[in-house]
Length: 243
Ligand code: G3P
Ligand code: CA
Image 1 (cartoon, protein in one colour):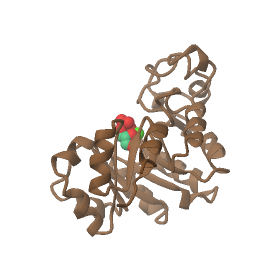
Image 2 (image 1 turned 60 degrees about the vertical axis):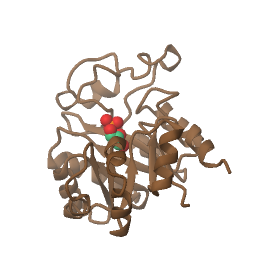
Image 3 (image 1 turned 90 degrees about the vertical axis):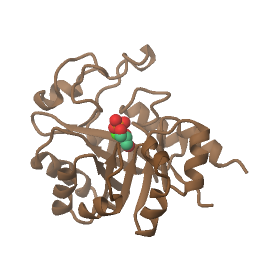
Image 4 (image 1 turned 45 degrees about the vertical axis):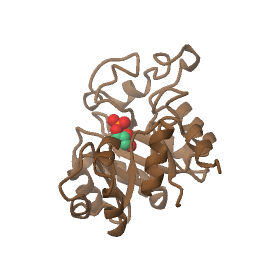
């Protein structure tokens, strides 16, 4: 049985504030093959690493990322909400995460969040391509237009289609946007488990989010998924290494 790859969700978000450099460092130390992050674009077009459309939940600031300047967003504290131990962690730029990741062997699962313009996608793609990291990055999005734009801008940058619920024909949906992988929410897979074999038979990957419990790791490993996206990468790696 093929072993799925481990993807650290929002960095190692079970032990460090999500989408911070501390969480990415912890993910790299965990040995996860992939680190997943979320990217929004600021009003001045800088790709920054934050999950929500606003900074309210995970920083000491307020407002929509898309209407804030990069100077304001990257100056916010993104760690104190999680624990005083992490006070002083900032909202990283995509550039800073790539700086941290580049010397490692880890891959990046880069989720592009909205709202975004084609210019925002172009800036994100350019940030990756200008560093020669195309072969280390898989760009994923729920937004099909993001994937269409990325495909036109840099066809060699691999893409994945995210889904909370399965499309009637997941293979066709992935192929329509030129995705190499179809990445569904775990309840959707458990409701129609044969989708994994369908995708694999069509030459497509399947990376499932967000999966933290061993009973689900077992079910997905038995189905042959390519990767498991988890908040607990060290625990998943330990579980996968058991005989
Ligand atoms: O990697 C997929 C997963 O991160 C999608 O959900 O809300 O955690 O970005 P969310
Ligand atoms: Ca995400």
